[in-house]
Amino acid sequence: MRYLLSVLLVGLFSFQKPTPKPNILIIYADDLGYGDVSAYKKGTLPTPNIDKLANGGIRFTNGYATSATCTPSRFALLTGKYPWKTEGTKVLPGDAPLLIDTTSMTLPKMLKKAGYQTGVVGKWHLGLGNGALDWNKSITFSPNDIGFDYSYIMAATNDRVPTVFVENRKVVGLEAADPIYVNYKQNFEGEPTAITNPELMTKLKWHFGHNFSVTNGVPRIGYMKGGKSALWVDEDMADIFFGRAKAFIDNHQPSKTGKPFFLYYALHEPHVPRVPHARFVGKSGMGPRGDAILEADWCVGEIIKKLEKDGLLENTLVIFSSDNGPVLDDGYYDDAAEKLGNHTPAGGLRGGKYSLYEAGTRVPFITYWKGKIKPAVSDAMLCQLDFASSFAQLIGAESYSTDSQNLLNVMLGKSKQGRANLVLEASGRLAFREGNFVMIPPYKGSAVSKEEGIELGNSSEYQLYDLSKDLAQKNNLAKQFPQKIEEMKASMKKIAGN
Ligand code: NG6
Ligand code: CA
Image 1 (cartoon, helix red, strand yellow):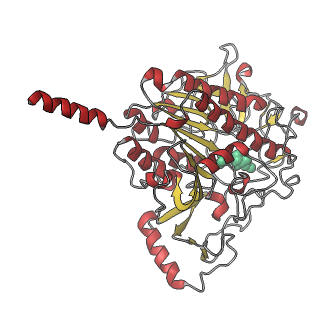
Image 2 (image 1 turned 60 degrees about the horizontal axis):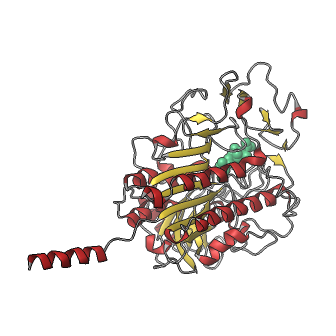
Image 3 (image 1 turned 180 degrees about the vertical axis):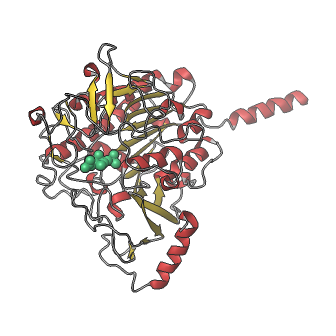
């Protein structure tokens, strides 16, 4: 009898064996606008590979980054915390110390704790080291100290020095005989810059900013010296990052290791400088920005092909999104505006990168899981901030962040009940979306950024828009609905303080 019972119990338990934890792949573009993906806004620029995910998964129309610039959005994605609650979450220079506290819980740490093999490949921009970093030594305070088993990154942005890759704790390809030095305050004696030696700018010329050291024919932000053997070639960056992402999958095959993986694949496109591989040059007819987007789309296609080839697609949750909205001229002469034609990077939303208007933070946001997620378009509101709590639910871990909401069912298409509200951020300024309304408090500063020509959202008056009727934010309802403003102010205060 007892024997029978235990057989029955064993049978029952093996029958109820939990499904294995899926792999998680986040593909994160840099400055890709809501309307830059053709599944979002059919235009002159085809993105067939991203479209495949969008049309085979859930295409979210109200998906947000927390912020209209890179560093804070990435901070939120990896920590599950509103970035503006932590000091220093602004666009970082290339020599900034690590912004994420190594003792705090993070998304990759949570996954690692649950048995995941974790990797990051691509753009980092969250600082490295603990102050006065020596790039020639092993780097502590790196992605490897906040939960990643493997990292292959560019430290900051492709327009900031040092223009080298860092694999785990080491600058890739550095030779001891030619050490590398970085300084954001002053140049190294005798070293050329874009100002003293403009002839070095063989590939791109600066329009504003970006007139410090020149590497690979491209002027950058910040000064650097040495490390010649380690300098990246911009044209090869997409292939190198894809190669490392692919190798990460090869080296962490769940069938061999018995463990799922988490890969954060952070593309560098279409951030400036836009220097795509020759395969893509001239292919979009829109100049380097369009070509860079085609390159990014190619990367997406290749990584999905890789998963498919390895039989991993049915057991991998794939997410595609972008860190902030689009910008055309971000400091180089590359004809992005001149060759735009009918393409609409913001897809009808107002503003762009740096803006408190929708195009700053509302981005392409796609979840895809072959066989598990049914194709759909969802207008539920969700934010990259929510990955932390949603993935916690996915893997049966406890959520560790109160800013991050568990929207797993929304991400899997089982619910359309998204966020009730979300605080949006652009360069330290906050706005508040609740339901279909968005409120932008008054801010000093110019209405349009002088150099990029983007409407920032600044006004001396309150702004209130009903996005269900006025997606382009043309009609300020603040005067008409003073009560609504008061309600939203009170609601925002509960989350963001005064
Ligand atoms: C700005 C840069 C811009 C870009 C941005 C960061 C100038 C004039 N502009 O300061 O080119 O690098 O920082 O972009 O230097 S982000 O996507 O990483 O946030
Ligand atoms: Ca960005």
